[in-house]
Image 1 (tube, rainbow, N blue to C red):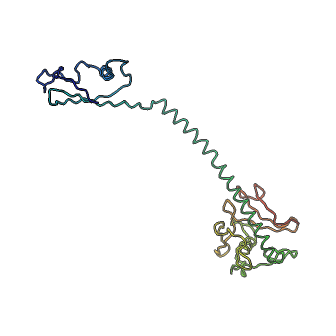
Image 2 (spheres, one colour):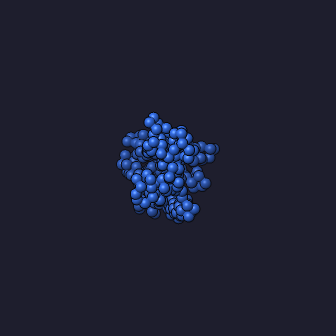
Image 3 (cartoon, rainbow, N blue to C red):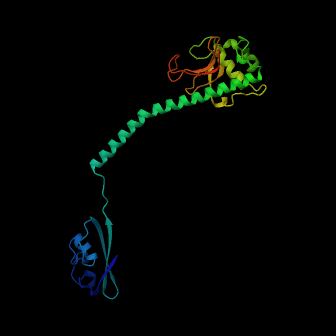
Amino acid sequence: MTWRISNASSTSPWAGGTTTPLCAAGLRTRRAIGHFLRGGYGDPPRKRVKWRCRISLRAGGTTTLRSRVRAGRRAFTLVELITVMAIMAILMAMIVGVAPRIQDAWRARLTRTRLLAVVAALQAYAGDYSGKFPYTEDKDGIMADVTAAAILGVDLSSAPSTYGVEGFTKAEVVLYGALTSTRRRGPYYKGAGGQTVVRKGTGDTEFNLLADGWERPIRYEYSTVTGLLVRSLGKDGTTGGDDIDYFVFQN
């Protein structure tokens, strides 16, 4: 903004007058300056402002007053900051409490999806092998004798016979080998590439196994009483807790 005061009536040292600053020529306070800027009418501005004044002399005895107005910035008060921090703390506590449950629910859903895929793969396998499902030995004319050597080139004797620390037996080794084999119309389990876990048998022999949502081996169990099922031990990892079971067939 630019204001011109003709004939240097307020006199300045450059115009040959007294040494009275032009910035204070009749306008002693900031509110008075604001009132002057409005043309001399209306209420003076209430907002706090900062002023910068500069005086320049132009030809013809005209003195120019240049002023820049910058509105003062309002900072946060201590009460506002404390309120915001309290709200953020409450939200963080809610997120921390809910996140583990959301993750467990997601893992359980992922496990069910994988188990159903394994069941479907076993049904497809049985369709190609005269209605027999893969197993470590022939039982009841239903479970076929599938050796790991014929499928994976691995010796089944290195796999444990009972569930131990590693959580798998020869049956789980056969399950993985049969469903990922490329024989006939295989592989029957299409997603095995990113859904497996490696466990060690005797002599540090490593076996690839199908995994549930908690990255533990999917169990493959057959009983003449109940039938054939695939099982996940759930979140707790113990039998009889929150197990997730799906039957391939029931006796």
